[in-house]
Amino acid sequence: MSTRLTSGATVQGAAIARSPALREAKALLLAGHDLPRATERMLADRERSAIIDEIAAIRRAAADRLARRAALAGGKVAGILRILKASATFRSRTRFDDAAAMEGATTVVERLVREGRPIVLALPLGGGKAPNPVKTGWRFLPDASEWVAWSLLAAMADAVSEVHPPGASVLVIPDAPLHTADLAFAAAEASAHQRQAALDLAALQLQERVRIAEVLAELPDRWPDEVRLRAEEARRRLRVDPGFAAAAGEQVQSLLFTVNLRSGAPSLEEAVLLSAVLAGDVIGVDEAIMDRASHVREWVEGTAPHYVGVNHALRSLDLPGLLTQRATGSPLHVRLTAHAKPGEPQPLLVPAGSWARPGLLPLHSVALRYLGRGRFRHASAFELEALMAGATAVVARDGRFLYH
Image (cartoon, rainbow, N blue to C red):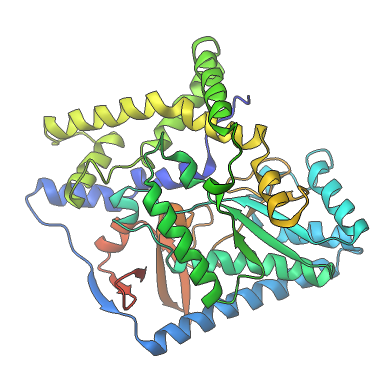
C-alpha cells in the first residue's frame, strides 16, 4: 500500500476552502445579510440545439488536434501514445518520457495493435456530484460539464481509431457509488445519475465512444472483504508509519469538502458556515456550527481508512480490468485516472478558456457556459462562486440544472 494517499481529484475539489467566494459569503452572513440566490430560466429549444452543436464542435476540434499530433509520431503505437500524452493534463506527473513508468500502457497498446483488437481506455470517474451544497448545490444529475468531459473523452477515442482502425472506446467506471459507506454518497442519486447519463450520451451521439459501466451490478463477490482487509491494513499503518499517517492527514483535509454535508446542513447558509469552519475560518461562528464541524471531522477521520481501502481494492482486484472483460471479453485496457500518476494519464476534461480549471472535475463542480472571444465556452465552477457572481441557472423542461 503506497504512502501517497491524497487524491488529486479531492484536493482540487477542496479548493473551495481557499475560494474568495466562501470568505465573502461568510462575511455577508455574519453581517446579517442574505446570500444571493440564482435566478432561473428554462432552456429554449434553440439553445438546446446550439449546445449540442457546441459539444460536437469541441469533440471535432479535439479529435483533429490529437490526430495531427499522432501523425507526427511515426507508427501506430507511437501515435497512440502521443494521443494519450497530448490529451492529458498534469503531464509531468505521468512521466510520459520515462519508459519504465509507461511500460504498462505501452505493452498493452503494442499487444492490442499487434492483434488487431479494439483499444479500451478505462477511467474511474464520477458517477454523481459531491454532496456539498457550496460546491454543487443540491444537484446530482449530469450537467453540461459532464457533456463536455464526455465529448473530450470521445475525441481521444476518435483519434486513436483514426490511427488504429479496429477502433477505441472509453469505459468510464463511476467510483462515487463505491463511497456510500465512507463519504455518504447516496446510492439512489448514483443510480439516477447512471440512468440519465445513458440518455445524455445517446442524445449527444457519444455512446459509441464512451460507455459507463454499471459498477455496483458488476462488483465481484469478494469486493466487501477486500475493502475491509485494505481498510484494516490502512488502520494498522496509521499506528506504525509516520509517513503514512501524514499522508492520511492530508487526505482527510481534502475529504472534508467531499463528504456528504447536504444531510447535515439543510440550508446553503449553514453549509457556508460549516465549510468555513472546516477550512479553518472560525472567527465569529457560533458554537453549534463549531460542534457540527467537529463531528464532521471525526466522521471523516474515522472513515478515511475505508476510503483508502476502497481505492486500494479497486487496484488489487483490478476492477477496471474486470469491467473491461465483461464489456469486451478481454481484460486488456489502458488505465486512465482522475489524478495523474506515473504511467496513468489524466485526460483533460475541460476546454481551454479564461474559466478553465483542468483539475476540477464535474463531480466537484457545476457547469458554466459563458461568452468569450465571440463564442460560447464551457467550464466548471463551484456553486457558491456562481451564486456570488450573480449567475443565472439554466434548467431543462423537467427542471434539471444544465449550467450557469
